[in-house]
Image (cartoon, rainbow, N blue to C red; front, side, top):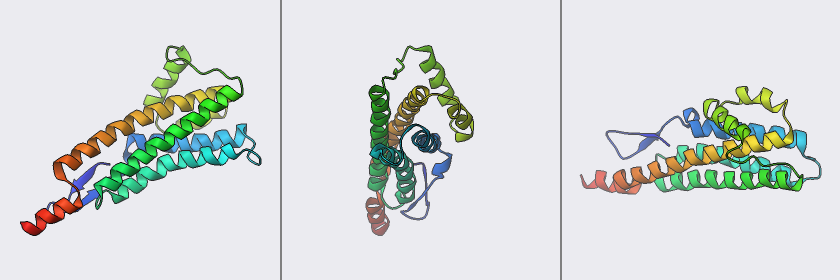
Length: 184
């Protein structure tokens, strides 16, 4: 998460994670998943519902928690950002499984529907845009849209993890900064 340096000390203050594009996309993924499960799965009998909603929630919540911990533990921040990414892997598998088990088509990366969805997902990271679309689409379309959005979000998270690692290498963690402050 972007952080700002406390110029007189060793703590860094977390940036506003809610403005980050990958966080906004995880909010959409969570809302879309809750909508999908409520409309397309049997919420009373299907354990997948809870697993999907929790995976989507974990993607979002771990970004928030990682950002909050960034001032005192760069290691925890990196770890939680990676947990968010891994949670989206789990969610991706659930959507793929739904397509397979229901005989629904998975869009190829050359399919015009995939290419249009990919562009729309780049341009529109907010639930307000996606909600009316989801309310008028089939389960197949929703799953494919989610797969597209998950992969985009994971790509953004991969970039963030690399930036977090580079920041750690450059500035160290709080222990290193505390030691430097104490010895200075």
